[in-house]
Each structure stands twice: as C-alpha cells, then as structure tokens.
Image (cartoon, rainbow over the protein chains, first blue to last red):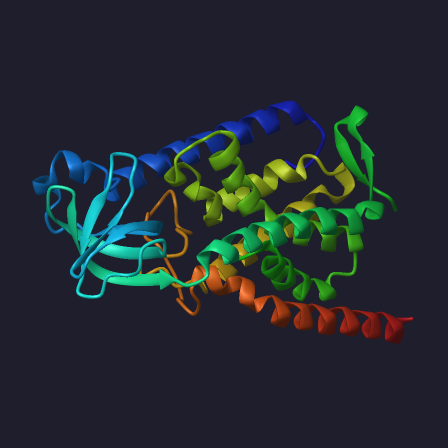
Length: 151
Length: 153
C-alpha cells in the first residue's frame, strides 16, 4: 500500500475514489438540503423545510423584513428585527410564500467586509510562509515524481 | 473556515511531540489539506459547495492523505500518511468550534451521514480575532520544544 509498486495505479484509484466520494456526498446533501432558489419555483413543496443560508449580503430592508440577493433574484426574509442594508447575515428560515421566507435564527456578521479578506490573506500567507520555512526538510525530485526527505 | 494560522497552531502544538521534523511538517501540511482541497474544487473547478463538503469528512481526509503521501518518498510514506491524516482530523476538530446556527460547521460522517456537527463557540467570521492567542500558543509550543530538545541532548 505504501510502496512505489504500481504507483500510478494507486494514485489513479485514489483520485477515482475521491471523485466518487464527492459525487455521492453531493447527491446526498442536495437531496436533504435543496438550494433555496427552488423556493422561487415551488414554495409550497418546501413548506416546513428550514433552509440554512450563510454569508448573504442584505440588499434592502424595511420595518418588518429585509432582502438578500440570490442567483434567481432577491428573496424577502420576514423578521421583527431586520439587519441594516449592506450587512452580512447567516440565517435559518422557512418558506411562507413566493420568494418569501420567515427567519427562524439570524446572526449579523459585524465587520464581515474586513474579517473575510483578512482570513483569506492570513491563510494564504500562512501556507506560503510555512512551506518556505520547512523547504529545507525536503528535496524536490520531480524527475522521480517524489518529494524526498533531506536526511 | 477558520484561518489557516489557527489550523497551523492546532497541529503544530501537538507536533512538538513528533521527533522527525519531516513528519512534523507533514502533520502541519495535512491540516491545510481539507481547505486547500475544498477551495480548489470551489474556485478552480467551480463546483457547488456541497460537492466539496466531503473534504471535511473523516473518510475524505483519509483519501486526500493517501493521495498526498504518494508524493512523499517511500521510506517515510507510511508515517507521512498517518501525519497527513492526523493533521486533517485536527482540522475537522478545530472547525467544530464555529457557530453555524445548529446547521453544523462540517459534516464529518460523509458519505455515511450528511449530519453536520458543531460545538458553536465562535462566529466563523470572528476566528481571525483568535490570531493573537494562536501566536502566543505557538510561541509557548516552540519554546517548550527547544527546551525539551536541549534536555535530551
């Protein structure tokens, strides 16, 4: 299993198993957690289903509701405490009408605009920096298809 | 996803007990792999989020770790696989700290169950605020490691 014998076959088989895992998991998740955009087509078939929507920008708000953008246009979310326009929210909501959902739980992410890019920036720098720091522990031997230890 | 500095510290701190520096590095690289695989699928291959969800599952980590260890030389391939997998599992455990309204921060039992798990300690966007604490933990871990190495000599 860990030898160089049939290396390419092992790599191909693992890639195949990964593709199978991703496809099967995607289908399983898609059945159980349908995309909220389907509510625009047939809200009645999703009555009682709770949708989880993460990191959506609020595009409009009034006293009793707010709107978020989706790939099929804006959705209206009913709540007694609508968040301000331009804020980012994560929420659980259930459909109550065409393109309309009632909010069950809501988080408003303060500072989303700078925290998210900072997260990605730090992550990219961390990976590059760490690989740079440990580069001397390994030797690149791409002609052999391997990363070899230095000692 | 918490930032990868938090993930690095979560793997590097127990990594002080790993004597072989190469395996220690693979442990930390292993903790990067679930996010690298997930973001690679999402950004490069333009897949839906649900397609990459299994990168953050125990089975997904095993397969990714095995694929990664094939690129490491044969003599350290087996411990390398264990290090990659341990790093990936540490990644999943760290992801549990996120609060995601009960929907689960990741789905570790895929493909067997789509149930999401979370401990829910912190807003996912606020994880970057942990960086000073992470840096302090990393500094203590590195100091302990150096002192431990000196005592052994």
